Image (cartoon, rainbow, N blue to C red):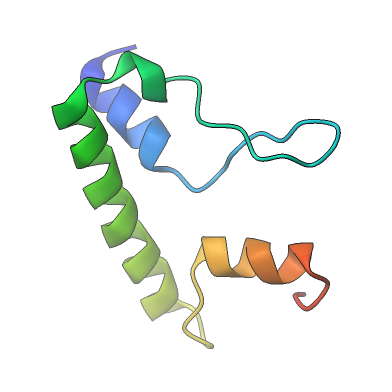
Length: 74
């Protein structure tokens, strides 16, 4: 996987979970250096803001996932 692809995959909202429901770090996270991790973080922030701007209630995919997890989402 190319560095740019690694950053994009880490910046995505989806995270795997264990059978007990614990959220796991993205497997590529540890492959990135400090600069790559910062870039992934910054891209994630931009992505969540865009998602929230497009959602009728101003919610990002992360916010929606949390609400579903606690039983308050659609």
